[in-house]
Structure formats: structure tokens, C-alpha cells
Image (tube, rainbow, N blue to C red; front, side, top):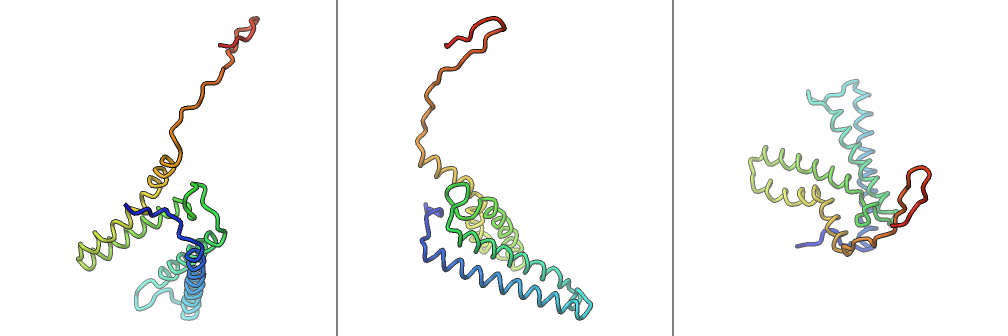
Length: 162
């Protein structure tokens, strides 16, 4: 089985960070251009279709790309101790990708497309499980040593050690 959680290395991290910065700038500037055009025309539709939804989606993609670039530039791992991005972020994009793949496969009537994309979505959605497995594999299962406890006595009696 492929280890999706292995380190990608410094070159890939820097390259990915640069590409995310470019994607963020292009997405946000395109969104602003669309907003300017909608305000100039005083219409939030284009040929009867809601153009403002596309502008919002582009803005969302731009801010997500900026967040990813920020996380990659920090060169720190998430609180889970394994990934750079938080697991919730990866899982939410896995859910969005699953919906997108489902819609495209339905529109194209292409079951093979849906099946091929499902493995990537499953890997993203089950990232927490994969992280937990890695933690379990790296840390031996040891029971803690028993420690003496103090028994609280009723009023008027001394504390005793078991």
C-alpha cells in the first residue's frame, strides 16, 4: 500500500508553495475583476446565469490556496504530528472533490471516471484513520506503570497508602 503520508521534501514544498501563491493571486484577481464587471453593468448575472456564484467560488479557491501556501511556507507539521495541513482541511476538500466528481460523472454518464476519482476522495476522507494508524505503528502499546494512590480518609482518620 502506498504511504500517502510520507515526506515530500523541501523542493516539492517550496514549489507547491509558489504554485499556491500564483493560484491564489490569479483566483482573487479574477474574482475582483468579475465583481468590478458586475458592478459596472449593474447586474450579477451573465446571460441569465448567476455570475456572482462563480466569483464567490474563485474567491474561496484563492483564499484556500493562500492558506495552503501559508502552511507550506511555515515548514511545520499540523497538530496531528504527521501532515502539514490540518486533517479537517484535507477531509473537507475530499468531500468537495467527491461531490464534484459525482456531478461530473453524472453529467458525462461516465461511471469509470467516478470509480477512478473515488480512490483519491477516499484517501482524503479517511486521512484521520491513516494518521491514527501511523501513530499506533510508531508508538509501542505500553500500559502505564501503576502509581501509588492516596486514599482520602473520612473525617478524623489519617491518610493511608495502599
